[in-house]
Image 1 (cartoon, rainbow, N blue to C red):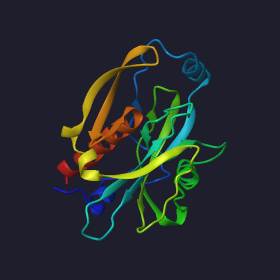
Image 2 (image 1 turned 120 degrees about the horizontal axis):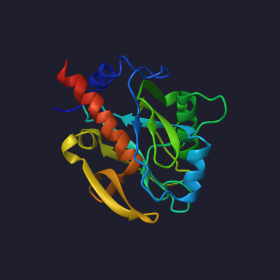
Image 3 (image 1 turned 120 degrees about the vertical axis):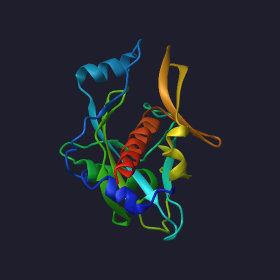
Length: 214
């Protein structure tokens, strides 16, 4: 059965945006050896960050789609990976404001065209960030422009596919000097892995758990 906007709102009725999520967060395993720059960040304390999980519906009866970005290859963190628009929070900035600001800066998504409806528990990445994922419906049509220094490409994927538990894999690869384990959810030629796949798995668990008890 296709995931609907009503189903998503129902799943996050108890986790509205801006509220402190009442569920424990997800902590990625930090595989050894830890690169020096990440060790320094972990020792100094994780940096707070937020991402926007943008969901689009082209027409009332159309399947929901998820907006993602391909990061440029020269970035310090998560270079070349598929990610949600987002980044580190400014001092005193809340998760919603930070997620909307980053989406505007990275892909030109106007904040007024986003309807935030939920916030997942924090996701602690193995690279030293504490990420607050904010979910929002995006009013369509919308014209987006990638920020060339950070975003190589903007694209959409079917929400039903990337939230289907059968499409997730647990994989390993040699990365930054060690064999590392991570979640992945490949879609066509796209390889969604790492923190983005981990947050999608978290979202899938919340949505499908709510559906089972509806």
